[in-house]
Image (cartoon, rainbow, N blue to C red; front, side):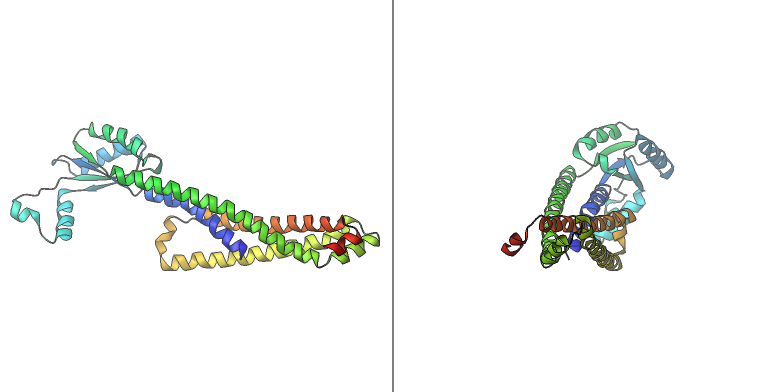
Length: 268
């Protein structure tokens, strides 16, 4: 159970990075163009923007498409009472995650406005700053939670292993009296800890994998922020902590009782 919780936090920390990138790359900058811009001219402008290195994706929206979308949204056609199409062609620019912040967008916006056939650039600066602040806070909380849970995991697993070794402290002392070496006495305890760690890690990974599959079944688009890399790193982390903590605790606990005399064993 401890390894499942630890795996969930590790998985959350890893996917938070992808979620941050996904959210930033879906923040839209609207580039308004002159009325004479068609799809061919829009492609040329898009190629220029891609060449600048900060564009993740660009979508061209013609005057007719904009009118159609707004008519569906408002339930009426504004051109019927205005006598003309009031909308202008636009480019919907989505930035790369590294550029989706207020400071970068200021100079990018100024640069785009200088381009021919661009009339204005619009984006929600407050929204972008708020999203960046919230994502940064989320990352800090998840990292702090991961560190705390690692400490708790070590404490709980350590106590469980210590109790297991404690129940056989007199067996350890008897083996020591007949001349068994410390390495020989430790070996079965360490081997048992290794098996327990492997089995616990395996069960934890199976349960976590089932949880991810259930999440995918409910929302297939979750694959946009989950990749095999995150799943592999999470599984590796669960196995590492599951095995390392049990081995370390077993080794320390057995050594503790090996150093004790017969009288000290009765006092604890």
